[in-house]
Length: 131
Length: 258
Image (cartoon, rainbow over all chains, first blue to last red; front, side, top):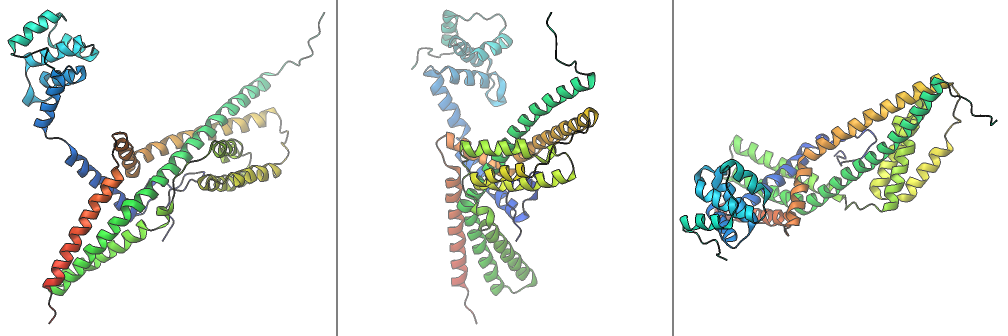
């Protein structure tokens, strides 16, 4: 059997392309199984949404931003303009700059104001003080 | 009145001076890149060794059980297709075993000391084949550089010191070929070094896209999240082996030779 190690040579003639077929297969199998393991570890989308919402309601600005972004149309099935503006507004008040950027596009001229946010929350039957 | 004793350089000499400075700078860059390149390759080879020992050996065991299942199936159905399948499964199992237990699997963790790295950098700076003056010099440099690469991979600082000394002992007097000839030689060296730098960049890009590099990246990411991807893979393949063993035993119990 030839020595197919990744040997350093001055001309680097042994690139990964020179690996033997079997060893490449062995590595491919590892990559494939690693991808399977990663997929199996992913939370169910509904669990993920519930978890995100809990974090957002507890005051996590990053979660509020992610939730707002999702409602803004990242995923068609969750598209909801009012919810998007509300959560991005909260995230913006929490200092997330990207939330301000999306809000400028989604609701031009919106004032970043706590009273307005409260009004918005009541209209959506949400509790902005929930922890 | 002060007398200026400094000889005015000719335009060719000025150009030569500029090119010498450029060569010095680019040699230092090349030495850094060669060191990074060697580190990257050696770290990847070390990861590959770890992967082959920890997971590859289990894939070999799994293939062995799959081959046994195929061979047993031939007893039930001694058709040509079944025999071919069994032969292929056995061939795959042998190949996987050889690779998983081959020389690559022996590569251990690569953790060069600062002294070793500094020595290798010095070798790359002084002995690099792309800085050769002529054919003989190129052969010597290529040979020494190959030895240096092996010494670095093996963490042998003494060997690197010997290579530096041996090369220095064999260096001929620098010939005075005149400004024009030296200028041409330096320009060629700069060009060769630039080619080498581009080559390293391309090779690193290819290596980074290789499956082993991507697997290493995933393993690092998993480690940052507090996990151990290789251990998880190990657990998965062990379960696959258990399933294959159970399948084999069920088949073997079913088989009653006439």
